[in-house]
Image (cartoon, rainbow, N blue to C red; front, side):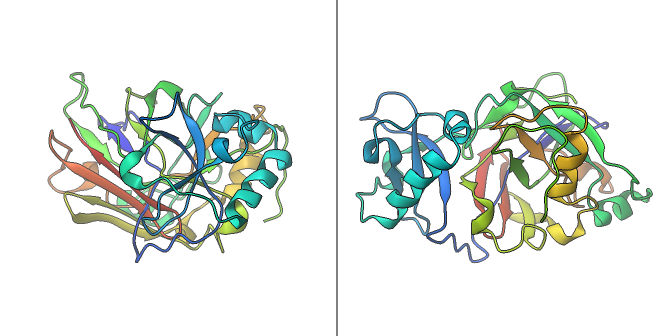
Length: 284
């Protein structure tokens, strides 16, 4: 994720690639375009550079947006599981353009100061309650899209975050387990179902700028876990399928370096989370 200004006017990137990157045959849902297809389609990322299974070709009755797919719940997920188990043709990576896994959600909820080590970096106390703010859906771009430097700010920072996508409508949810410029919320590369991740609160997370590691931590440093955040926020608002929660960033952002370091035109930002994948965004 990208942040602008000393008050961190925003942001967000979803995350990851090769630790070595081993996305398996687990459920990795994507939105994509291809030259021979009309409009966006839903697919399954096969991982390890294998390509994408076109879910809409497997079952033409499936919706073509992730939000509609999530709204239909188990019915559409069962189709995706059958497609994953079948021996289906795969579109090579070179023929597809990955979109953000979710586009135009009803809301994008952000969490500030949610890593213990990030709080220590700033020499501030760990918050007692989640610090919540929001972003505009217009800031979302794909996992490999360019990020545009706004003329209004000369202090654009980097941030890597784990994003949680809501699957079912709900309020008062209990689980068992800024302000934004356009292009400042790259998401992707895939929506990974919760049963495909061993433990979302024990994943290596890092950010690289021009190949240099600038953030390196683990989601076990989160102050408030994902289920706690969902329960907390849903006390006040209703979540809808496709809504996004950006769960906070670890230490290493540029504004707290001495001297501060900010992104410039031509920089390449890679955000990575173990088991999830990588997004790579060029700053223009």
